[in-house]
Structure formats: structure tokens, C-alpha cells
Amino acid sequence: MPRASHAPRAAAFFSEQPPRLRISAPGRVNLIGEHTDYNDGFVMPVATEQALFIQAAPRRDDRLRVGSAAMDQTIEATLEQIAAARAATIASARVAPRPFDAWPTWAAYVLGVAAMLLDEGVAVAGADLFIDGDLPLGAGLSSSAALDCGVALALTTLVGSNIDRVRLARLCRTADHRYVGTPCGIMDQFACLNCRAGCALILDCRDLSFEHVPFPTADVAILIADTRVRHAHAEGAYARRVAECREATRILAARRPDIRSLRDATPDDLRAAAPDMSDAVRRRAWHVIDENRRLHRFADDLRAGRLETLGETLAAGHASLRDLYEVSCRELDDLVDVLCRAPGVLGARMTGGGFGGCVVALVRPAAVAEVQDRLKSEYDQTHDRPARTWVTLPSAGATVTVLE
Ligand code: GLA
Image (cartoon, rainbow, N blue to C red; front, top):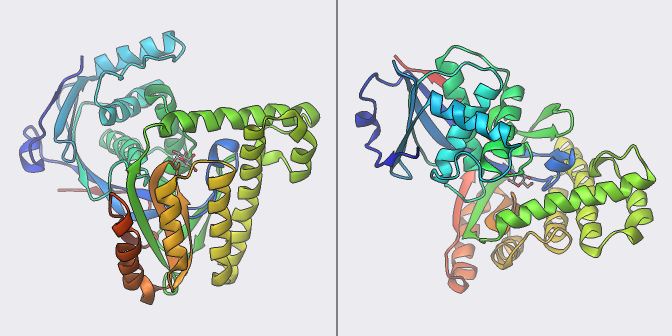
């Protein structure tokens, strides 16, 4: 069934009807709370100014036709084909191969969201979608969640259904599990849909309650630095971390049955159970337990305007991801190192899943240009790929604009 061809530019793409909607779906950069979401813990992302844009038009038939400017591809499937693929997935108890494996990866996300809407009994109709934007793809700023969420918003808005954004985030996350096979947490989808401009979002990943905490944008700039490296073992290693955390939870729960996830465990619980754990499993659990505590400290400092101490918490978070969770890499460590030595930088750490991708740094606004110069002289000179940097304001979650 896969059908992919080159994508024409947006104007030529909409041959049947002009676009009716324009969705802007941002990426996210997580300030603190890494690898805690799938442990029922806490995360603190901000949405980036960089976003995917999706223009959407209804069709008269039941085809989903989707063009990607970045991939220079157009894919097409009928809703009947998507429905058949989802029925097969459910019948085979969701094991590999997944129904959209033969499609380009980006298309599997799009079709997975459509299939998931059908699974949830949400109406979907034929549509033309055209995707472009300035969010870098595959850089660890959560472009795949932006794609999920943007497509979900486009398809539901086109048929006039107004789904609550908490439900929509959950639905997109489950689509990734079921139809793409990534065992991700809910942070990225939730951030894309629910962040607020000027604020960091604190999300409790257990009950999905959240709070918007004003970010001091006049005093602190958020600098993102991309290693432009993505190590090939990243996906397998992510899935292994998820499994190790489950194993830690199982061992902890043998002593305290009310521990349902690492979020429920205290340092004392872990000390008591540590002899029953492998070294790796114990270190993963330490990271998660400490990282949730770091997030609360960071949040308190943010609320109280104690900006200087934010950096210490970021540094401790990076050390833990490097040494205990073991998801950093040389490029990320080197970038953090150069950034932390630069005047005007409050602190820096790797952000997102790890094994490449980006570092987030909190920088005094007046020092940003100098910090960028320093990266050129102290990082770019000694690495194969020069780092790419952006400054972002904490931005709003996805927006829908009705055209016409
Ligand atoms: C990836 C996943 C998220 C989260 C982070 C690590 O971005 O998609 O759910 O687990 O890694 O914090």
C-alpha cells in the first residue's frame, strides 16, 4: 500500500480545495525532569518558537494525502486502508511488524494518528495536509510529537470535533506506542498542545495535572545548542531504560507494594532494595528519584526568582544523566562543558532523550552573542559538526487558525 511521491510546493499541492486551516505545532525543550515521564514523575518543558506548520483542506473522497516539504514527499492512503491496518494491528496484539513500517517514518506517525483517532471512535474524513515549518527534524526538539499533534488537530478540527487537549495528548502518545513502536512518555505531546507563552509547564505525568509557571524572560534567555549528532543506538537504548525502570519498580514493590512506579519510591526505599538490584537498574532508579526532587527545587527557585541556583540544579541533572542514567554522549558533555564555563551562563544540561540531540542553557540575555561566539571557538573547532544554536522564548502550545 505505500505510495510516496515528490511533494510540490504548498500552492500547487492544494489542487482540489484551498487550505481551510493552518496549524502551528511547536517543538519543546525540557528544562528539567528528564526520563521521568514514563515513571509517572514530573517534567518542565517549554514550547519553542520553532514549529511545524500544517495547512489542511477537506477532500470529497476518503483519501488522506499528506505532503512534507522537508522530506520532499507526498503520501496517500484511503481511510479504508488505514482502518484495515488498525484492525490487523489490534488482532495481532500490537507486535512488530507494525502496520505502517513499510512507509517512510514520518508517514507512520501521520497514519498512526489517523488510525488512533479511528480507534477512539473520533470521526476522520478525507483531507489534504501540507507540512513545512522551521522546527529542525530529528534534533531532539520533539518534531515527531509536533507532527502527531499537528495532524491530530488538523483532522479533528476539519470535521468540527473539539477534543480536549489533555485527551488529545494522551491519544497521540498512544498512537506512537501502538503504530510507530516508540515506548515514549507523554511529555512531548503534552507540551506541544498545552504550553503557554512566557511560561514553563510543570506536568505531573501520573494524573496529568499541570501548572504554568511564569519564566523570567527579561532576565534569562533560553539557548538551545544542537550537537547535530544522533547516535544510532538511541531508540534501543531508550527502550532498555524504560525496561530497567520497570524492573527497579518491581523490586521496590516487593518490599512496599504501594510503589506503582519510581515516582513513589524514596531514597530510603532504594537503599533498602539496592542489594536486590543490578548495578545498572539501581543507577537508573537513583537518577529518576533524584531528578523528581531536582525538578521541585528548580520550580521553587523559579517561583522565588532565585536565578543563580537554577544553574546548579541543571548541572546536577546533567551529571546524573551522564553518570547514572548513561544517556549522554561526548558531544553533549563537551557542549555542556563549554557552555558552563562561558560568562553569563547560569547553567546547561542535555535535554530530551539523549545520545545526541540538544543541550539547553540558561543565559543572561546580554551574554548570548558572546556565548555563541565561544561555542564557535571552543566547540566547533574541535568537533566534526559545528553546533547549531537557537534562542527561544517560552511559546504557546499548538494554535489553529481558520483561513478564508
Ligand atoms: C523523549 C521522549 C519523552 C521523554 C524524553 C526524556 O523525548 O519522547 O517522552 O521520555 O525522551 O525525558
